[in-house]
Length: 288
Picture (tube, rainbow, N blue to C red):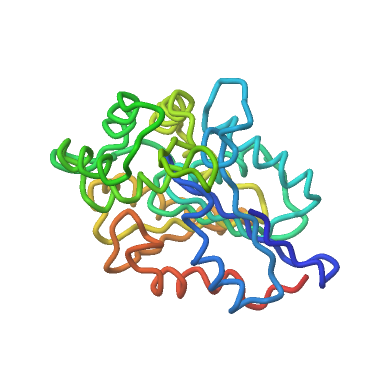
């Protein structure tokens, strides 16, 4: 989805990216709120490769963080926009860092990059009894490509040990098949699980600390840690980010750490008001 504001010659633009097994719709209500509060901005919501509407575009592998970032860079070049803000959740956060790496030059205008509940390096996703993306992808790959009931899928996921919230979120990736007037209802998945599995492997293996510790001039990276997402963050991660804060300031870039209270990993669902307050300063006082 592209929310472009053509009433202003070159309005400031924000690009928002979802995580693994998500879609641009994850950001829909949050971005509508941003657009109301900051009407001079335009917002681009992207379905990453193998996800949502982009799953129908058959992309050649490898399906990696880097190739996904290149997709988005090509998209914004096609749209002839220069984003002032990049926001990525989880996998999308690493994609944002990879975009910064691939641009790899001093930028004509300052860019704020937001990495939401993801670290640049090691992925610590899920502990015993928690929803682990790898297990979720593996389970989904065993399901038929066409199903007759969303409720049955939710129940199957819960029975397998996944949380109700995650089960209900996953079935948002099911769309009705056949004509709308048809009396028989069935649903098919909108994602490419084979490609997504490869993307998740890349997410775990990709290390982008060198980007954070050697930022191009004009780039400001903001990390946001969800208060209840304890297992995703190690003391080593926090220490390296704080060290990068000091070195980036000396080089004309910037690194900051934020904590979103009363939120787990799904930050824009758990505490949208708090997230809105934290992100808002990136949109204030920016002129076209």
